[in-house]
Amino acid sequence: MGKLISVRGETYERLKSLKERMRASSLGETIDRLIDEYLRRKRERLRELARGSRLTEEEADEVERVVEEVELREWW
Image 1 (cartoon, rainbow, N blue to C red):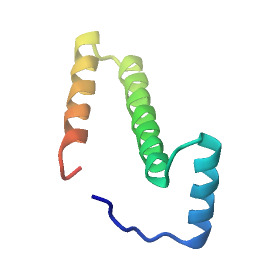
Image 2 (image 1 turned 120 degrees about the vertical axis):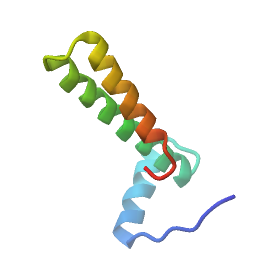
Image 3 (image 1 turned 90 degrees about the horizontal axis):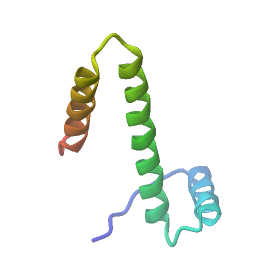
Image 4 (image 1 turned 30 degrees about the vertical axis):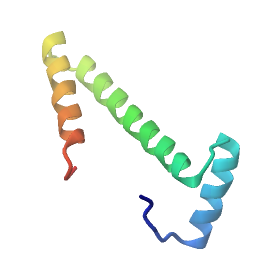
């Protein structure tokens, strides 16, 4: 079921323009793709930080697993 959200006119125009450039079928699909990309980049950055630290490979994997678990919580 759809939900109604309110955004500034400028934001709507930017989102609509991005929808066209992404060839998305709807604004909802555009937002979903943006969220997915944000989360992908966040996880990638975390991996880079963990790999560049003094953590072992196993510890870095555990940090990544915990972050993914926290992201899946309903309240997150």
